[in-house]
Image 1 (spheres, helix red, strand yellow):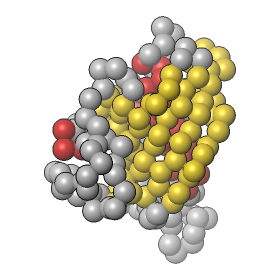
Image 2: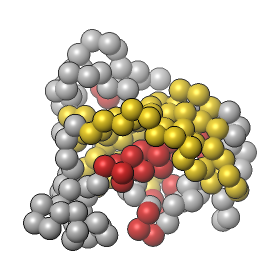
Image 3: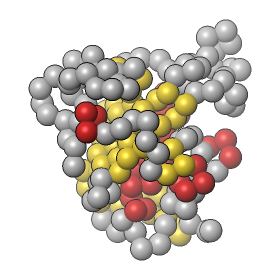
Length: 180
């Protein structure tokens, strides 16, 4: 399981970490251009649809399903572009966190016998460090720090061009089976 060391991050292909804070995962061991699951395949394990299906693909997941990487490409046709903000579209921070939560939900459901709808219980220590705009790809890192059949707690980071855009800790809980 590629975990980041406490030492400063080293440059890797497709991501040039230049941040002072440590990344959750060692991206040097992960091909960020890979696709483990496309949108249709993700829908088998996450309930999000239509405008709220934010992830474009799952890049990588550990064998334990406790760590993963996802990607969200900002195309310019998303529902928020016109109004947040006219002339300078910026992905809303709450949607960055939601995209990370969808990755966490995907990993949580890899651990379940039957896919579950999981809802937020808590967002803690959210910090936003860089905006994300049209043409950029937000790479999401997730480290599930606690998981049970009913609940999970995950650390999440979003990265663009090697810079941490946001980081937070979320908690989620199973509320229903996913209707296929």
